Every structure is written in structure tokens, then in C-alpha cells.
Image 1 (tube, rainbow, N blue to C red):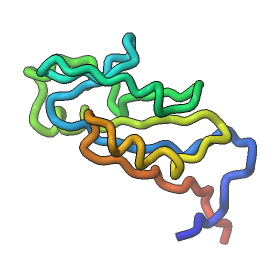
Image 2 (cartoon, rainbow, N blue to C red):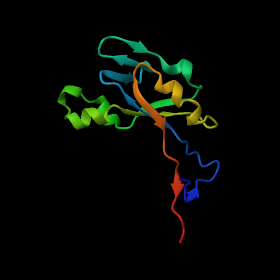
Image 3 (cartoon, helix red, strand yellow):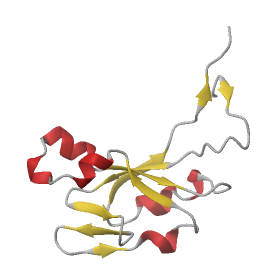
Length: 118
């Protein structure tokens, strides 16, 4: 579906790659790597352009002790976004990201739209 009113070019709004981590994995923002409970480590930088950011959708839950979270909160903390630099298209990276050992699934984020005027 096409957006009602596309966002103007140069607005700085980018479409991310949305991803869901496999159970037992987390992203260490300091190391910029995915780590598993079993001690595995995966560095995603080789698959991404310079200037890419990987962020949790719920940063507060990501910082919390998972043993103290409810099942629903643990599920929410598995969701992340890969925000590519301007000029890079999410469609060009989603398959690479989907193949990462830490990722259960990945998809292109939704098209942003401004409200339609009646």
C-alpha cells in the first residue's frame, strides 16, 4: 500500500530493518556485537555500511536483568532495528541480516506516511 502522503525527501526519516533476536542472544552496544548465552559472538559490521546503528526498540528492557522480566517483557526485548545511513536502502540489507546467527527473523520496516488531508 502506498502512503497517503509520502514524507518529503531530505526529511531525515529512514526505513529501518526490523529484526527479532533468537532466544538466548543479546546485542552488546559497547562491543557492537551480538552475544549468546552459550558464549558465541557475532560482529555484524562487515555486512553493514559505515554509519549504521543497531538499537533496541525497548532500551530500558534491554538493560534490565532478564530473570526479573515477565515473559512478555523478555519477548519485547528481542526486538531491534538496524538504522542504515542515509542513501542505504533497507531492502538491500534485509537478507544479509536475516542470515545472521543471532537473528530469528528480519523484515523491512513500514513505509512512513503523513496524514492525508481531506
